[in-house]
Each structure stands twice: as C-alpha cells, then as structure tokens.
Length: 202
Ligand SMILES: Cc1cc2nc3c(=O)[nH]c(=O)nc-3n(C[C@H](O)[C@H](O)[C@H](O)COP(=O)(O)O)c2cc1C
Image 1: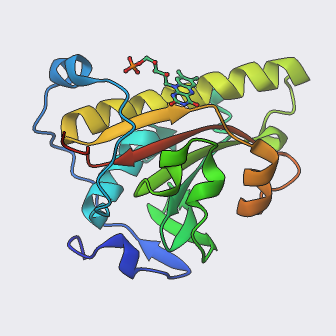
Image 2: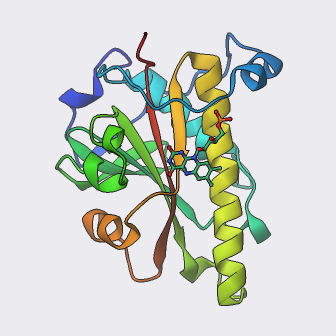
C-alpha cells in the first residue's frame, strides 16, 4: 500500500497507512531547515509520505480526547484539511486517518493564483468551518481561524524540512473560486493553502 503512487488512486475513500512516528530529523534540524520553496519536481508523493504528512499537519495524537497535532482556539477544531492531488481532491478524515473524495478532477490550479500551484504534486487547503465557532464574533472567527490554520501550516513546514520536501504556505488565493471548486458549505471559509513536493534541484 505504502508504495502505491497517489496519482493511481481515485477512490471515494482512501485508507492511509499508519503514520511513521520516527523521523530521521531532530526537531532542531527541522527548525534549522524550515524555509519556503516554490519549485517542485513533478513526482507524486508516496502514500506513506502523505500519511505521515497529514498526521503531522492535523492528525489525532490523543485518541481518548481526540486531541490533534496542532492546537485550535477553544479546541473548536474548525479547520478541515483538503488534499488536492492531480487526480482528485480529498478531505482528510483525521479520526479514521483516511481521505474522502470531494472531486474526481484536477483542481490544483484552483488552489492559488501563482503559476507553480497547478503543477505542484500536492496542494493542501485549510478551510475553517465557522459553524463550529458559534461563540466567537465575526472578527474573532477570522483571526482565530487564521491562527489555527497557521499552526497546521507550521507543522507541515517542519515535517517537510525533516522529510526533504519543499513547501510554501499561501494566502494568495481566489477564495470564492476555490470554495466553489471544493464544494464547501456556506459556513466554510478558505484560510490558507500550502503547496508540497520534492524540491527541484538546480
Ligand atoms: C500567512 C502567510 C501567507 C503567505 N502567502 C504566500 C503566498 O500566497 N505565496 C507565496 O509564494 N508565499 C506566501 N507566503 C510565504 C512567505 O512569502 C514566506 O514565508 C516569507 O517570504 C519568508 O520566507 P521563508 O518562509 O523561507 O522564511 C506566506 C506566508 C505566510 C505566513
């Protein structure tokens, strides 16, 4: 399973293999290597890498309480992570550690307004569900959802730095277009996107 390339998979539901919890890089090495990269080789990510990446981003790290690898204001857990891949877009179901198909087409170009996003092997999208933030004022919802998405993005930066992957978090997004493409509900707002892939060597 872990050697199957992602572009061979277009299924309603993709069970991810267990994440690898031992990293060859120390936290200090990952922090030292963290940077933004915008040039990606076209190679798809192995399913095992995607599994560990998504778990690092926002997976369940405390099964009993449902706690996640990234904090969230009031523990609202209002961010949904979407994985936009060449053959389809999926929502990450952290509880079951699986991907759920939301669109069986290549939506990578809709995830941002910069040229590289259309060919990046993976674009993550962080969408906040304001329906889970009922107690917050409209202004608080926007600030806190942005902060929560930023915590997830940093997890991805550190994972990528440790795994030899390039990544860049992105705010330059046509949010209405992307929300339509992903079929988001009226209560969902795109906070950030993040491109990931193997770095293009010079
Ligand atoms: C909230 C946020 C939004 C960003 N939006 C974009 C973006 O839309 N496009 C882009 O290429 N980089 C984007 N970046 C990446 C920054 O340009 C980058 O972090 C900055 O230049 C510092 O470089 P470094 O990450 O290598 O330290 C964003 C970063 C943050 C934190």
